[in-house]
Length: 198
Image 1: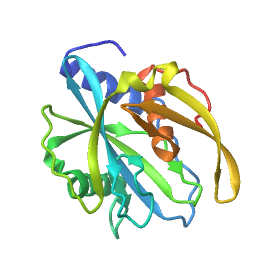
Image 2: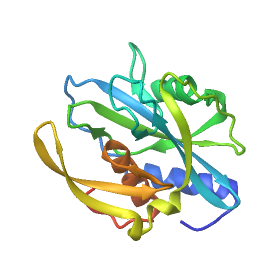
Image 3: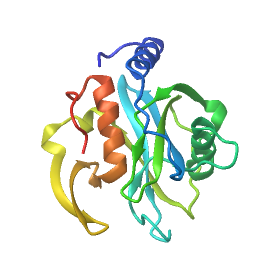
Image 4: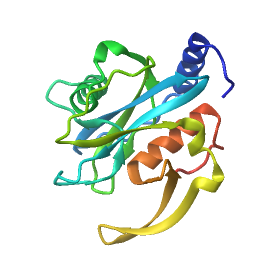
């Protein structure tokens, strides 16, 4: 993606997220969730804001994630993603400019996830919910596109072997659902050839 002034970047990314339309999974009764993919520009570079889960959580302790969670009754994906971003990392909904959505994903346990991509102004105004989030991890998007920082590894999940993509960035390992979301974002940005995401 070419470096462009802020508004040009927003226009370009909105176009890239809308065409082709993001893929959706066939309807079923699986639990529906949404995550916020906050993007911002600092010093001409596009950054993504990720977070590390607290080790005190009952599930997914210490994993690198985008803020998100379950859709409550009557919510759509955007409403849930904005609510969770406010609750987990203190990003206020009014501070998020909607850019579009990425392909719907499904976890090995069957949970469906819609990633909502939003632009936030820099410097960021955040407030960590320490019960859920241990720390915030701002990472340049281009770092994920460095092939020397990408690993493909077989891991066992729920008793089955899965080929999993792992990004080694900022001294952390980003894998699983978050890695699949990052891969889809890179494809949309033209930083990764289109192909099967692991």
